[in-house]
Amino acid sequence: MINEITARELNPEQFISEKVNEIRETVGNGIAINALSGGVDSSTVTMLGHRALGDRLKTVFIDNNLMREGEPEAVINSFRKLGVNVEIVDAREEFLTALKGITDPEEKREAVTQTFYKKVFGRIVKGSGAKFLLQGTILTDVDETVAGIKRQHNVFEQLGIDPQEAFGYRILEPLIQLRKDGVRIIGKALGLPQGSFDRIPFPGPALAARIIGEVTKERLDTVRKATTIVEKLLVNTGAFQYMAILHQDRVTGMRDNKRDYGQQIEVRCWDSIDARVATPTRLPIDLLEKLAGEILEKVPGIVSVTYNIAPKPPSTMEVV
Ligand code: XMP
Image (cartoon, rainbow, N blue to C red; front, side, top):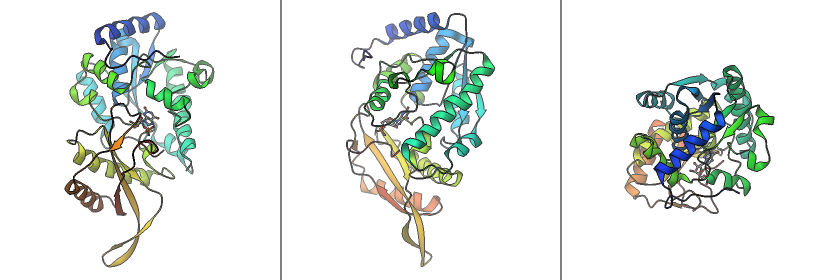
């Protein structure tokens, strides 16, 4: 049973000093490793870990081919400014190979998990001599996994999986009592720049969670382009999260007076406090039209753009 700390009862300074001490005690004189994706949770845990361990925390950015446009460079530069050195690990081909031919959502998550934790991380941890992996799992990840809603890629112990046995290292999860709103408060208190701790959430399986059907290099490029447009046009809406989804079904469209059997992008934009429940944002129709126009113009092969109007539940925020 994990004791939740709500954003309201959270005392940031106290929380940080407790967790820093816990990390120091557990890791002792050893080294730990963490993977930074640039999301709120992993950025916060990176800062917390560096405060506790300094250079004895090695931070890597795993380029899995599933990230958004320009993301690896942006994340590395922003942490360099904070005095944290991040090493890029190129695992693009490895992830594509693991995802080849998979269409089932849970199998897709499992392929990302196994490639990340077993193959890529297993290798890095072995090479570095680290015994600990520091990771930014939060309570919502655990809840949804245990409830069987979605297998979050970073949850193991609560499912009876011993990471030491399965992967050969221990996992430390200092944010596990918090939800997203609490993590943002801690991130801010640790000195993350505004753009880092108030970013919209982005899931662990990254763009693979935004593709219905097989994840291929081409389909990733399509959803990545649409994502750039959606994020640019919806940044000032104040919404909790917004995303582009690539559908699997093709639909009849027309281009240059000819039939074009094309692809569809679904736009989702969510109002939510903590991601447990969510409702679609009431976007102005002008903005929706602008989204459609830009996606149809700039993303090759798209003939249809839809806006999701179903709340969570019964929907979930991502499609995978
Ligand atoms: P769902 O789709 O479950 O998403 O309604 C709820 C929130 O969680 C994010 N999400 C994830 N975050 N690892 C994460 O760290 C994951 O595997 C994962 N799956 C979904 C999602 O973006 C939303 O904010």
